[in-house]
Image (tube, rainbow, N blue to C red):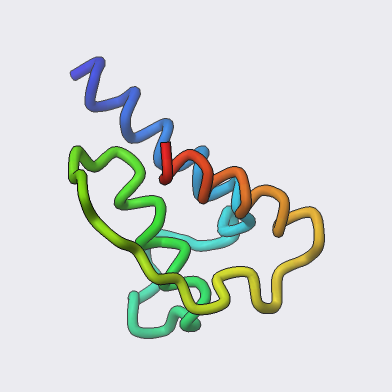
Length: 81
């Protein structure tokens, strides 16, 4: 159970780090904006073992506060790495 909880904690921390900490589990995914949905997908792929994959993000920082843009850049770098 410990590895599962650690992964869940990292995922939730990633939501907060990129400015999506306001989302709740009872919110239907169909109500997310395009940018929110893209950022959720980015977080989902962070722990992925996929290689040789090209990601195309269409303006994932649109509408974000400037301090959240820096966080998004850090997430993109983590995804790259």
